[in-house]
Amino acid sequence: MITHEMEREEGARSPEAEELAQLYAQSLKDLQEGQILKGRIIAITEKGIVVDVGYKSEGILALDEFPDPQALQVGDEVEVLLESVEDEEGLMVLSRKKAERAQAWERLMATANEGDLTEGRVSRKVKGGLMVDLGGVEAFLPASQAFLRGFGNVDSLIGQTAQFIIIKINRPRRNVVVSRREALAKEKEAQKLKVFAELEVGQVRQGTVKNITDFGAFVNLGGVDGLLHITDLSWGRVGHPSEVVQVGQKISVQVLGFDRETMKISLGFKQLTPNPWDTAEQKYPVGSRIHGRVVSLMPYGAFVEAEKGLEGLVHISELSWTKRPSHPSEVLKVGDEIEVAVLSVDRANQKMALGLKQTEANPWEIFAAQYPLGTRLSGRVKHLTDFGAFVELADGVDGLLHVQDLSWTRRYNHPSEVLKKGQKVDVMIMSVDPESRKIGLGYKQLMPDPWSDIVSRYPSGTLVEGKITKIANFGLFVELEKDLDGLVHLSELPVRLPDRPAAAPAEEGARTKEGVVAKLEAMFTVGDSVKAKVLRLDDEQRRIALSMRRVE
Image 1: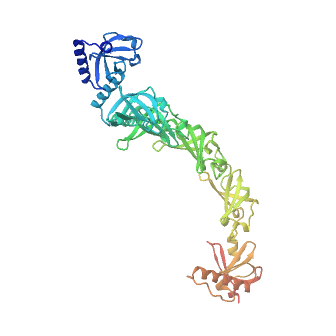
Image 2: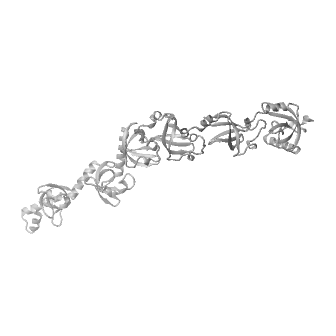
């Protein structure tokens, strides 16, 4: 080599050698460390690759500077970076890798700016993040910028090629910082815009169930999520969306609506299958019977599933002919398989009324046929009210015996004056209405009406004697004979009492009423015998007016 020969002949140089040394020294002055030079391979040894860069000197490149040293041949041209003009052995210090990095940096700086999208390969993990190879230039990817949301497993990215956004370039230090998160966000936004540009109401698209909540499922349509509400999952009853779809499941959905400003999409799943209500009127005509399953109980009735997506309501009033349950759970439970009758079908409002009792014979119609009007039969007093008594005539069939129908002649204030709960009593059928389930009963009708005889026996002016049965604020009731009372008004008493003011305030009226009764009770006692004169008989009201004052 020239440099070695120059060293050996340093002591005795010829003029030609001296000139050659000067030319070599002059050529080295034109070189600068960090400069990229073109060289030619002149030898391949076990120690390295000898490269002639054309400046009267050679340099050696390590074998690991080349990805495939076996493919190299003498005469191949390579670009190298000059690290040092001369080492201890007088050879140039060259680097092919540094040359490639320097060239890559120049190319990157010539084309890239902060905010640009670029492609790179994640090469290795470092403290705080990853290093990304951008075509020969290593860029730093902070762990916080590696994933779209939160922090993931950065090791999973090593070796992957991906898109990155250049977020910072430090030219003096040759540092580049990139973000995968921003690139993913940008890609997602582009995908959203693309999807929204293609959307149409009624369109059927493929998607993947991304997330499930209590109110529905979110379906990814390829960059944008749409909401599949629980009410649009199935025509039938759905307790939770997980009953129909699962996370990761690929499904077809229909676009029900979308808003490009808010980026919201409403999806439907059940709309891809026929609506069972469209044929409900033809499939379930009024009067037909169907077998169904009780799916829900509410205070007002039970919902019965006739088929998937089609339910009808059995109102609480349609559960039984005879029972009056306070809640449907007294008759049915969820899961019961029952037969019901179709009462009505409303396709427009998707409602169907069903009846359970209609699958059995109507005991009220049976009763009406068995017991015509005027029939006499026995019953048991089931319940007493202010207006009368309910009498059980058959299993679940009750009739009302009104208080006015207890006696022809006596007016009772409450049926308990004559009847007791559980008492057996004979009654007459006065009216039957199977539709409204009402039966009118009579008790006094079992006996002849005595009024015509009473009128003949108690003409006006007749003197009578009887016992006081009741003291009221308006007078005294006097029993003339069994179950026959007459009224002695205050104005017809032996001693005149002041009448209660017609327009007295409520409290004052009450005090006046109590005062009148107190005075009467001081003068008379229930059970006292008194004499009176018949003033008149009221045929319409069946009342007899008496006077004690006129007896005198």
